[in-house]
Image (cartoon, rainbow, N blue to C red; front, side, top):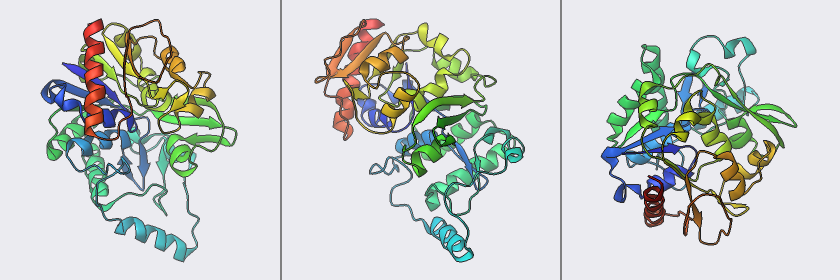
Length: 330
């Protein structure tokens, strides 16, 4: 049994070849939900859906977002209507009082659907409508995710990190932005001053997540701050990691990040943007998988391989290194 912590694209890319190393039937993926947004009344869970679509064989692996070959007629029409009506495009937060009323799981992350700032494909949107409707019928996010996983035929188990709302808010020199506005709309341009996981103090781990964290854990090459950070902010999550073997794959080669906004975010919260900084952020990690060109010395076991993942063969190679590292610390 093994549990992967997934957020962004790093860990899903690793999962692209993990099935040949780790039996999917014995694999659980715990996905970050701090990036979730309610857009036009529909709850979008980007990190859950990346794993969901990948496991279902429909993920757009060019973007590592959405469904491959999806149409965007609804999104196109939303933008046409906004332009024709002279409505301002870009992220449109709902009013402050609307952020804490209505659907509790969407707290602090509610956006208008006018000229939506995240492109949602038509088939992708059907998933969000189904998810939101099942939630409104009284199901938990864990139950809804299981229903969708069954619909997509996933071989492994997929769990949201919590059934409670946690919103990743980026404090910048231009104000407080939800992570999706900071990354998708602003492309990580504002300078980061702090990162807040709003709601994490009240959010709880589900019994299934607690059970999954009792197994050996793999932290893939995801963003340590906004992909893994929301999980670590949950009461009891990091404590559980200290009690089980954990292997982490660095998203850096020394001080060069493979992709995404990890460098600016790490520096913004006081970590060095490097493999050494990742190790400092992960005191619970018992071993690391580093790139062969990464000469960082750590106080924990290291397995080195080429950690660039551009396809299933690369992912399988890194997964074998992860298995080797787990064998050293289990």
